[in-house]
Length: 250
Image (cartoon, rainbow, N blue to C red; front, top):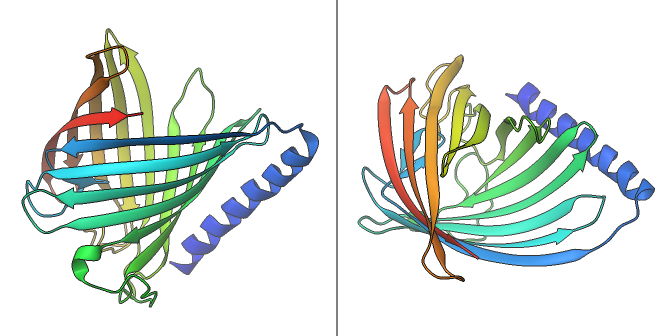
């Protein structure tokens, strides 16, 4: 999987180089925004696999700090957690990301640190080979146009994978509106053996296909909740999931 890791790093370096050039050419305007929210989900499905145990409802709060410029993109730092309501499961993810809109579409790069406190490993344990308490992932996203906002997403772990256990994950998704509902159709594949995706072959395996539907309900002028339903199918594991979600964001 070293070739895959090198490819991911190469792509990110290209985007960073284009970003520096654009930042030098454009006049910058700054803006700082703090947002927060939370989801309540009937079960935790991540890229086609069920985490936290079967049918274990989760409370998932998040906070984000975003620094935006007028023409040179935006930087974000986010903290997201998931707490099991029935069984002992806690996950906390730290994400640093950068997004920029260009004449060729919208590009994004991100580094995510996955941490699992329920494993009882010390927070500052940064050992590799699956022994440490932090797994680092690099991700790249691209949306060609706003008129046809299909999103392409690529992710790969860079640190703390189990030896000889690593998958490249690729996903395409497409959001659209119909009547008063918001939809998002998606299909994702993983290539390479991986504990995280439940993949045991070296081929591309369809692990995450489905559709999400949601609708926001305004209770007052300043308070609204979003209700959603996900239908997810994992062809590789031959499993189907239905997830109910209630979300609040400010």
